[in-house]
Length: 227
Image 1 (cartoon, rainbow, N blue to C red):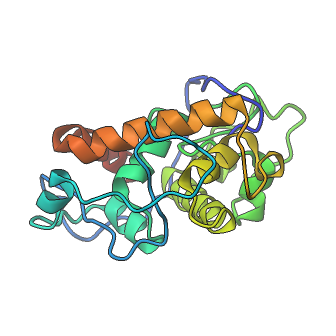
Image 2 (tube, rainbow, N blue to C red; image 1 turned 120 degrees about the vertical axis):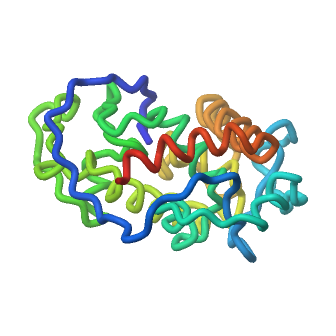
């Protein structure tokens, strides 16, 4: 979420995350949990137009496999809590920060889901007032956007609200996450920038649905940040 375009800038952290620990040992996973009766509708990334409502995607072979093994990952539990498909959650993180919990954009968005300071505060995160928001304090005790657990939860709450606002149109919701909901009408269309961002996320989302190995790899990357 940049509301102005971004390229995440890696900074050396001085970070002390306070993340709830799972009491169970994280097993080696082979699959993700599919979200039953999802509130969102999805589309394949190459289906135009981007501003029309989508229909639910058919279950892939990956999702079928995911029913057979349910890994006890915090990240999967978080996705289930917000009723967001794990593959979609990972795709957004990949596009926003590439799993860098201290990524900062040129517009001042920070953390895994690239939350802007004001938006993060509205969602209950502790974020200082910065003279230059592009130079935040990376200590997660001071700026909670850099706490991966809190950032992920806040980002998914925000994204789910956009999905509801745009009546299940995933492309519009993704575009609004990137450019800001004030710049995306409920009926669309998206700007070129918003459309490119949505296409990028949807392409990665489709990759995860088709390739269980890649999904597992990135799921482990995320899980390592939450523990």
